[in-house]
Image (tube, rainbow, N blue to C red; front, side):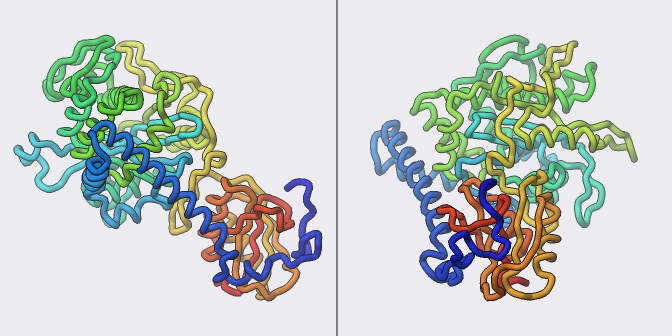
Length: 489
């Protein structure tokens, strides 16, 4: 684009109108071509993923018909509890398309033991929250544990602890709270209860974990030896629940969160390196205890993308920086906003949350892992969709150039458009188009990976349609062209 001359009069170098007749008419086949092709590509990916899964399961289970029945059964189990409210809390597009995305992992205190004791009645709180950034293209995963006692504001409830967001409004409330706190869009979530955790690990035949120190914690369920070993489901659960084993070292929640990330990394490694039968059995077990918006085809595509990932180098981890405060007979964790901003800026750039590993010298617990330190792609490079303009953050500041053209003749609309996109951080200029007869507002972009940002601009503008400049048809300076039509509001 740097070699093109700006279309100051709104016309191309060959003097053709900025928009063709087909593009002015939103009902023509040509006008919908880009969106149609994009939708077909996405649908084709899902069909391929489901088809591959059917073959895999047919081999494992002995028949095509059984495989498809199996797919339907486990997918319905996985999606039970994914309410419309949850779908609205998740950022669109909410299906896996191969790009980088953020998801929220929730570990809840639902269990047969607690149900029997009726400890919380009908109300549950999330015992653990992990904001996870998944970059399939670069085979990198970042896990940031969030302190359950972090103080936040919840509309209508005032100051509350972060895990109260789940108790008040379920997973949708937790998704909204974490997205707002972290300043990133959350496209997916997964929730697992403690009963299921044991069975998932056992279905894998145990997981290999280097336990940093010996655990003796009756409140967590018992004892786990220190050292490299294969943990059973019960042992893994003890490690993930243990807090009081660390009373002499400091904040037990911080050590527990580190152990949870350690076990999750071991589970991921085992699943991604397992044979077909083990994967099939594990997926069936997971579906009984995990609730997620993911579809089976998406899970398979993601697993294939991350196959053979090395947790030691490719999984980054940390916990949000907080300071403890005792107030009104209650402990709260106050977010260190400056350190948190620094950490999340690194995460958005595809870097580890911390510059180097953080290891407790007294007990060997890895509190933060920088892996290979190399990083993956930034949110901009890998196509993370930012939050919409409905009171949410747009996420990372953009650095591109936008050309805005007034194509409807209403005085001041180009300047108004410039103000609407200003929070995104782009450099932009505004002027008149070659005529004022354009009916439709469009945002023009060059490459497929820019579509998500064009749609982000549309969200900020409040109207418009994304059009790819696939044939170099439009002449403009910068990364995007906004042409304002008579549909502008």
